[in-house]
Amino acid sequence: MKWEFIAAACLAFTTGCAILQNENAPRIAAVRAEGKVIVDGDASELFWQDAPAYPLLVPEDQPGSPECAQKGWIRFARDNRFLYLYAEVVDDDVVQEGNADYGNLYETGDVIELFLAPVGSCRYWEFLLAPNGRYAVLFFPGPGRKIFRTAMRREVRIEVAAKVRGTLNNWSDRDSGYTLEAAIPLAELTRFGDRFESDCWQLLTGRYNYSVTLPEIEYSATSLLPRTNFHLRKCYGTLFFPHHQ
Image (cartoon, rainbow, N blue to C red; front, side, top):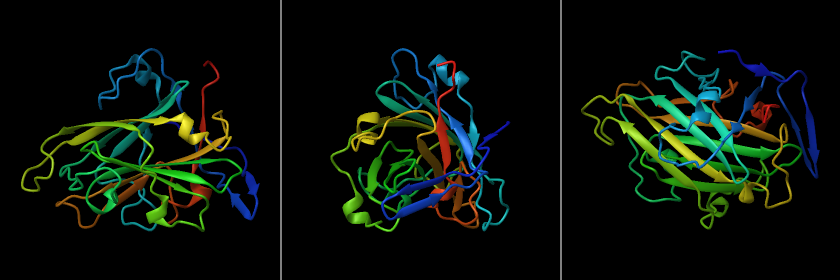
């Protein structure tokens, strides 16, 4: 598919923080979600057909970059209350052993991670979304203050649903993959006064893919990262809303 790219690099400043955005970071569209949205792990609503599918890419420091051995695509939509994510991935060994929300889900199996950051600010959010419907929410005041224990926002509630094409947590058979859908409340993202508008937010979606058939964990993201680090803010894409909305 054809990607849209930012025409020039943007230097964003805030107190004690300067983030230089990579000029090759993608622009990522979130289409307008019309009508009632049911978060069920199935892109049955018509608006998802208009949402571009952004491929996940392996970081440049990983073997085989940028092609995933097991591919994945991410779509986005929004309405007045939520930002919606829909992921569809190929996965021959779907696993997530974490059985509770607000755990380190990236350590216990497959996970989709969504990072959202207001342009011109150091602060950003990290959402962990697992194929068994578990999730975690973290908030970081800045890149230099990633204290994971205190970053966990247990009071924040999001919606997550997934559908596994195969059997979860059974390494002895082969699966096809899974789909995952999530709704992120805009009230949480804008709680510090940031406005949810086009080109005002940076975004990255990352994936941890564990599989008995892979030589190592496969990492991938919606930006082509120079190294395997999902916290590289300069490489985040920019979220925008198509003009016809």
